[in-house]
Image 1 (cartoon, helix red, strand yellow):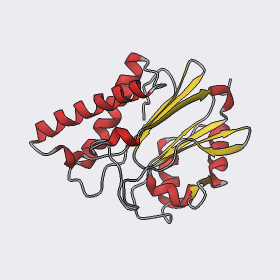
Image 2 (tube, helix red, strand yellow):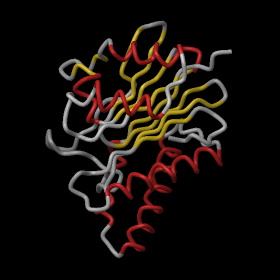
Image 3 (spheres, helix red, strand yellow):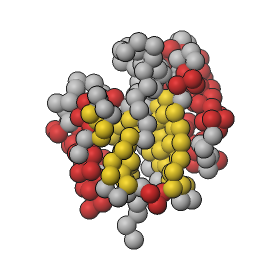
Length: 213
């Protein structure tokens, strides 16, 4: 997450389980994206700007692969970002995972999990032709009561897969955050105790609500 950002920013990445250095890949993708968005105040409101960010992430991953003396594919990772800047929410996603928004207590999927040619094939930032699967968009922040972004390990619990409808627990999570800030320990407790039954996959969850003033 972009904790040091002067504006609300979530960036998540899920390294490929089969990739040796996927953790480094995920950390590199998030760090690069946060720096690029924060320093440039980059508005990913067009395909060209999203591709610019994708390329920045790829450059950083190639440099990491060179330092590790390994192939780029060993750092394979998915990536998503969502942030609010000057009354607009921007989002981008490459690979699986989901972004959900709530507007006047109505939940909806902003993004959908992106798979490859086959059902069990995941698209990664490093995949050939990954940009063909790019999802992005923007909408007025005033139309959003809260946001969730999460990796595919939480999809079985937070999204009804057959119809891509968010589960009611998403509203509950947003309500909790509106009542009081959730610490990293709080999120870890949720993931380890309430959500661990969803799957054995790695799980990452990001939440965002409007500032309470």
